Length: 469
Image (cartoon, rainbow, N blue to C red; front, top):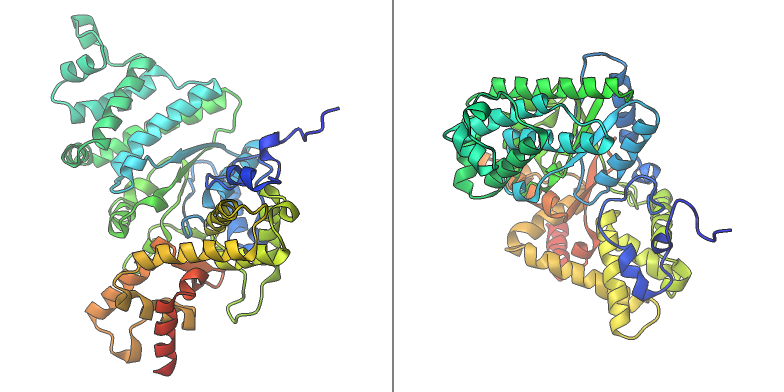
């Protein structure tokens, strides 16, 4: 009889030594069936995640009515892991056929709807190939040729680039074999990922024909639905467009969701867009773009009034215990609890703190993480943020005000002007984006500052001045 569980391999069992700990503390999303996954819905203190699931199930009962929703939250709060496991539930229940699409790293600095559509076609084609139900050559080549014709000066040029004969016979073809469509897609993507000037020119040409582009993408999605239906799969295609929260510029992200509204909402498929939390702050109200916006708050370790939220603490201990054997890796329960508190309920920051603490312990020749190593890890994280928060005179007073009020920052004493409001909004968006400020409880949203930042001298000085004012 095997001594390992059928759902996990040895390298996913909780680490019992510091040397093995790092491999269990990777920041990658936790996929379906992984023993590392833990449902943290109750720990977050919100019904938002249940609402998202029910909303999509309800939409699936309505033919030709598509759900388009935004899913927001601090980066590293666990959105991708939640979505991957939700997709598995829908697959098992035969509700949707999900396709999970990650934003290409080359688009994190600048992304528009035409880019998303090109990558979406490519990823859906690849997913269907893996499913064993490849899309038809004609359906794929029609939209790929459209992109190529809008990008290149002639068909002869792009056919030459992908190694396709340019004889009279091929010139007369209206479609491409699958392999050549894939080659052409790869070439188009590389051009967009290349120089900024080339990217802008390709976008300009494609977006001059926005309605035509949308209809071609929808025809491709219609074909995808038909392929699923004929294969006996759930005909509802659920597209999860992930990592849009990695778009580095809030202004670029706002532009995508604001100016591209009609395109994003016009797709004939169910789509979840993982929008950055920072853009759901004026002047853009995502609720004016999407009928449904769902929030993934961080795990709540304290109530808004400062009382302990035991469920949050307990569940993060359980999450760590899935990765690390707590009695073998930590010298005392208090050490782990300290690191959990320092994470502020952010899964990403907790994993980073744990990894740094075990490294520090190993450097000092220890066999377990003790409070000294835990404090060193928290101090290193604080130093990283101190470097980011420059000039400190601009950031720390705002951080102190957020900690005091548990709300977004407002210019004081009713003296707000257009410029002071714009500055406060910009700073608050930055703080959300960099992870200094965390959001809690999606049903009654409130904010607080990441604990290692609160422990810095700069923050403490700003807080004392605010309390004395």
